[in-house]
Amino acid sequence: MENNSSPSNKSLSPILLLVAAFAFCLILGGITLAKKYAPKALASKERHIVRSVASSPLKGRTARVDPELLKIGETTFNTLCVACHQPGGIGKVGFAPGIRNHDFLALASDDYLRNTIRAGRPGTAMVPWSALSEKELAGVIAYLRTGNEGYVSELSQDPEKKIAGAAGKGKITFETYCAACHGPNAEGYAAGGSGPGIGLAGFLSVASDDFIMQTVKHGRSGTAMLPFVGSKGLANLSESSVGDIIAYLRSLPGKPVVAEAKSTAPPDPKAGKMHFDANCMACHQPGGTGKAGFAPSIRNRDFLALADDDFILKTVKQGRLGTAMLPRPDLSDKVMADIIAYLRSVPAKTVVNVSVDQSKKFKGDSQQGHSKYTSYCLACHGDKGTGYVAGGAGPAIGLAGFLSVASDDYIYQTVKLGRIGTAMKPFIGSKGLANLNDQDVYDIISYLRSLN
Image 1: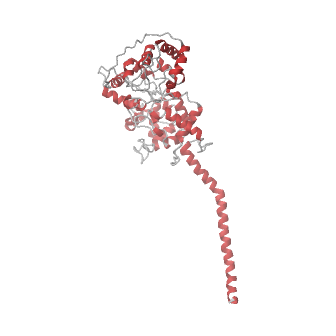
Image 2: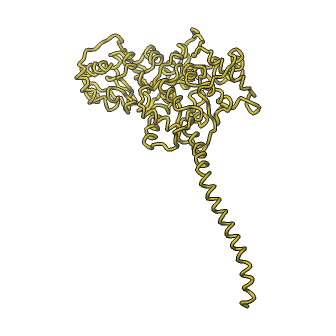
Image 3: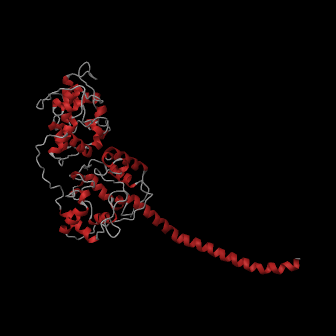
């Protein structure tokens, strides 16, 4: 048996050795290829992920974000931006765009976002946030770019590229395909459009020609902004037609040119509710009830008893510098009259009759007022009356925007009467929360006025 089997074993040995050698070569070759190409493939994959999170340019960017910076950004966004841009930055049609959209972020550089936040968008509800620190600003941008890792957007744009076009042709094309959403003069929400104001100077100063081209060409996934270029586009536009639209937008004066028509019609509370819901509700909440630590109640019985129509009109038109209450000069006098009529239409079981003397001035000691403010007002209204920005539950009563329209007597009557249904209780007399006397309030008013 041994003699018969040995030749067979000898004949199999070279074959086994050959197979083993071939397998070894395959393994060695695989390792070599992996060393050569795997890092590049991994880097390529990482670059695509970074693009969806961090946008172009990609050089020097990574997908890793400092958790502390991200927390600062989320807190800042939820304090200053969420009212308009909605939780998660998803936006609201006809009110504010989605700024966490992966297609938007693929085209918008950090400089684009930074400049928009710093300078705002004049003529829109996007107020300048120039007071933000660099860390807060970087945090907001990091927050916006985080959360889209699951979707990779391959969009990119050349911020230096200039696209030629004919403004005359662009006007016709814009009116045909764009005006329905972006408004007749591309002023967006201010004209009742469902899309943003792409003809305003604030947008055009940061958006390059190629940014607009790529947006029209590819659209914004998950929004009403669909692709418009080519056979698969909504309108089968050519790139040349988009160049004409861009030329038309750049030819606009940068703000609505519609003259306000004087109306003799009486104020309409129903129309006022519509305007309120579109322009004010995001901050002041449905029905104008307000939200502690965020926005005051402006449909409150006691507030409306003290605030005359001119007070409300000036506050809306001028805004409150340093707060989220931006100037809204774009709202016509008729629209404002309707909004005020809506605010005053709230039924009240008990009517408060208070007369405020706008010319009355009180003499007080600002140093004494500082001490009393610290004891009785600071907890809600924040250090130096900065309100919500400082984390206070009450509005900013120490800023110029408020003090420029609030008379001494307005402040005095507010402290004396309080605001029913809110944390602002009466503070004067034996029934007051702090049993303050008139002079105490005069001193506090003097302190507030000394801040500006």
